[in-house]
Amino acid sequence: MSEKKLKLYGTNWCTKSANLRNYLQSIWMEFEDYNVETQPEADKTVRALYDGQLKFPTVTYGEHFLKNPSIKELDKFLEEHDLMT
Image 1 (cartoon, helix red, strand yellow):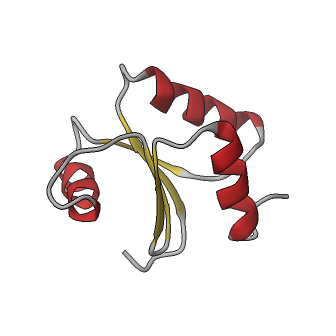
Image 2 (tube, one colour):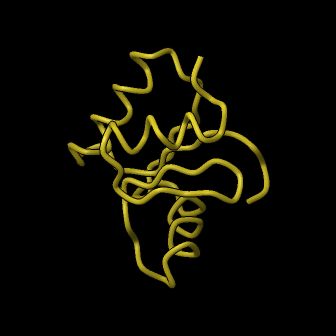
């Protein structure tokens, strides 16, 4: 998980996942979007972060991750990793 790309792990039906996805798109942030229900590798990645539990939405950047962040928490995460433009 050392690849330095912003990634969002969620589902299509989860409102919080959709809100984060829409927010990242609205600020023109480049990110990869993964569905933990339809993509087994995404499910496996998220479970590895949380001792086998599936928790979403999860945002990752390299080795760093956030579980179920608010927009304010996400902004802080993006700033900490110099991703804000």
